[in-house]
Image 1 (cartoon, rainbow, N blue to C red):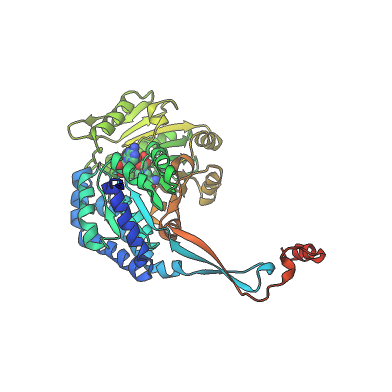
Image 2: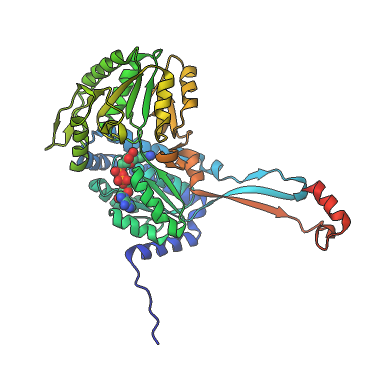
Length: 459
Ligand code: NAD
């Protein structure tokens, strides 16, 4: 009789190899974790120009934005985790209820095991590596699957990661949807996905059969509410600046504006003036034909008034920053995530209308409010749920490692950055240590009359 051994795929071999690495216990020590974080910092420092060149090839990104959006952001996350790691790793003592005395209780943070990181194309280096920072800080083995839509960056990550990090415990697999599905089918201790909401659903479904827990960092429409009391000039400048970064292809980019009718025209004019002033910078390009065609169709089909832009060139995949006034809420630019250099501005008659408008739609990844004071802005934030929120600025919350970053509802589940990422990819383990004495027989069956009385007092 011959025993049939199931054929091993590349993905299943990889899964068993890194599982073995994790089981060796090597990755648990603070020293290993710190060495990996130092490796990420060194990779960013020494290979900045190669990373920038890959991002220029994939996305036409300027060296300044490559540094800010991908290199400095990744190195900053790694340095912050390295500096705070030992404090995060400390066990936390808890006090015990009377019934459990004498004894000691504590929470200890343990690695989950193997983590699959699935990256998107828009910040293809940062969004593949920042989750790795959290994963190695928590002592996990990692498989990184960068986006196939940023092929030069994906190739560079596959080349450089083994040179700077522990190449047996941290692996890179290149490929698209099929590769990701095959990896997910192997079962991991966690899958960390950054990408669109629709693909997020597929990731969660693919993770379900193996009960792989998921973090989903998704997208959506992040609104900007501008009240009549806001500083219109600053709001306009910050809006134009952040919308232009990566040609609007940023998950927390301002998607659309709800402006108080009293200031809507002035705001729109000032946004256009800022766009014109900033356009000395080279216009960034759209990632591919499919996204370009989707964006151009939404400009062509809009029911709103085009105040600025609406010119494009398919050969170079460039779309001029476009401002649209009062499109219908059913318009394509108002129904799906824009993810491009198009800014719809809708005028509203009150703060109440703006709050209602956002709350009738899926919970956004970010909410931005420009108001006369931080207090007035915070009061609106309190009435509109979102993943994160910023008062009187846009996107800056993602640069604060002390703040958790993540979505809520349709914009995602689970957060990371700084300590939050360490906790996300650690198991918070409860430990209770008891003595064997005293061991009163009264609490064991058969219960005597006094037992219930005593238990009622104790528990
Ligand atoms: P995407 O969802 O198309 O792809 C992301 C990753 O999923 C890629 O690695 C891809 O290979 C993989 N993938 C695609 N289809 C798959 C499938 N059927 N099964 C398994 N894996 C699959 O996202 P994208 O286009 O690369 O990125 C843009 C989206 O990501 C936007 O919606 C944006 O808002 C969102 N995003 C969110 C964040 C965040 O932090 N919340 C950051 C960046 C981008």
